[in-house]
Amino acid sequence: METRRNSGTGTRETREPGPAVGSEGRVAAGRFGRVAAGSSGRMAARLASAMHAAPILPATLLTAAVLAAATFATPPAAAQTPDAAQSTVPDLAGVVAFEGSSLAPVVDRFSADWGALQRKWADLPYSPARQQRMGAFLAEWAGALAALPVAADDLEGSIDHTLLSAEIRYRQELLAREGRLLDEVAPLLPFGGEIVELLEIRHAGGEVGGEEMAAALAGLAVAVREADAALRSGAAAGGAGLGGGGQPTPTPIAGLRAVRVLQSYRNALGSWYRHYAGYDPLFTWWASQPFEEADGALGRYLSTLRVRVVGWPEGGEEPIVGDPIGADGMAADLAREMIPYTPAELIALANEEFAWCEEEMLKASRELGFGEDWKAALEHVKTLHAEPGGQPEIVMMLAREAIDFVEERGLLTVPPLAKEGWRLEMMSPARQRVSPFFLGGEVIRVSFPTDEMTHDEKRMSMRGNNIHFSRATVHHELIPGHHLQGFMTDRYNSHRNLFGTPFWTEG
Image 1 (cartoon, rainbow, N blue to C red):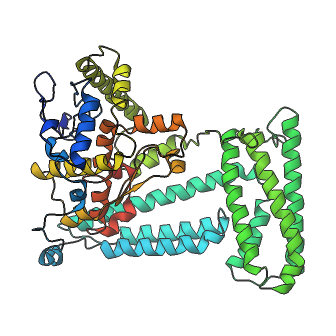
Image 2 (cartoon, one colour; image 1 turned 90 degrees about the vertical axis):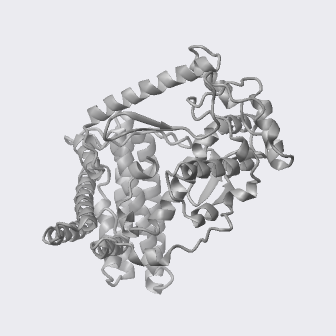
């Protein structure tokens, strides 16, 4: 079920795919009995058996309407095959006549130039020189864009002008935010300048002297060991370390940020060393051992930061430490997304939405016969899952159902190639630990148990990817969701991919 708040009226609009439900919420009897024999019929029989114990399946419980009989009658392979009468070649005259934005070349140029600078400065992360160059680039673009006239009747050009201006302002804010981060972590990385000085040599294409570089690396190793000892001694005395001399004791958040910066420095230094090692015999002869000592010291200091400041035990799982951006950061992020609400207003709206969800869950729970215990109703729905090995067929059917739903109601024009072009892959057990549900786009990656999983993991995967939860997920990942989104944005105004936002992608 898809429920949205109409931005113009403030009312809710609910669209619900699936079979008609009677006044008492019961699915008409015999729908599964009319399916022809074969794989689709077997799947329908499994579902009918699973649902026999509770024939009342309201759609209000997380899209818990049953699959339509017409869906089951469609062989799974047909879900990806367009109608033979439909050509996958678009109307080429229409493609030629499509009026794009007059500022598309400007957006494309900014995107390409910004990408080139990002790549150029990737070998010198978190450095003052990088900050200065990126800041100058953005300032120049902001001035040039402000001076660019756009015709009053050029709607698409005006949209791109507004979007690109906002994008540049936001990237300027992110750059300033990075500068504040560097100032904050500087006490934890007193040797950071020494690393940056070494990296700048390669970035500028300068020559290196093997003996000189060896001395610099040896000095870096000493500086890192001294910082490590200071951090450990301070922690041993009851603090996080490095809190003397008027400096505040570092917080876990500051420690986490320092780890992120130092890991970037260490990776860049390793790339710097490999750039010369072996190619310059004198450099290799002089610098090999000092580099190993410096790199080892950096690795130990990273471990000390994680354990003593962040609170990440040696060998344990990484703790969840939030990285707050503050009120100013929130304001900048909301402005970039063009969301005209304060954080407090958004929290209030979220509470309203959550209360509505609870009301709907209670309605569904009562219809299912569980009274006010919606959690028990939810547990029941989790038992209505496909048998082992049966999930791909369910996904194919649900994909066909979603396409039929939007087409039969004239909600969307779905290009034939979009219907044909998607693919299905099963998700690995390792990835399911991170993404227990589906992932989508041109490829829908389906979570379901494998023989490698423990018994508990198998049960969790089957319950969490039951038929009705999957029904909500498939149309989100494929059509009209992520797959169709990507298909269209690759073909129309593709320059606007620069302005990507999760508030559009995820809805």
